[in-house]
Image (cartoon, rainbow, N blue to C red):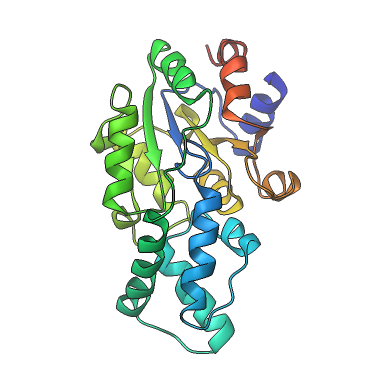
Length: 242
């Protein structure tokens, strides 16, 4: 743990690590929702003649849905589509996703958030989603730790993950803090790339089928198997941030 923090400081040339906020990704971090997303992506894209595998869904997780669609159409059909066309396709995916059973909250998430708040730190969420029902569920499930002003969605930025913009916006929303004052918790390669591009200390939790190196190779400062493990290690971790 101490070694990971030391490497982070050296990598970016920062003098100290004094976190004031934790920014969580949503799908695959707070909720075990990625299996549903992967299924909805495959079914929706098939309606438009696009082949999208479960691996594709996990590999592009965190990006804005419309960006993923435009990329897939360009790669497989060889032409550009407008944002409006991509949004219509994304609406089909959204409809299919909301017909599926509600994804459960990962074990340990609320206990971890409670520990974070007890440390006097702010909690934010940075997601590539912009679906109002999902945002309403976030506020319903985590309202004691989170308010809407601390949520970054796909519609808050022009460039989604893997660009740093979502996490730069997240730092601004939780108090205009600096990268060395920020911990990011991510589970997807694109999200890790976005967080490290914003120079935040990035903890990757591998809750999906991708290999560990897919997260460490793109810059994760620390790799853990779950939020529960992070919750168990939080007190030990936080002693190195004082």
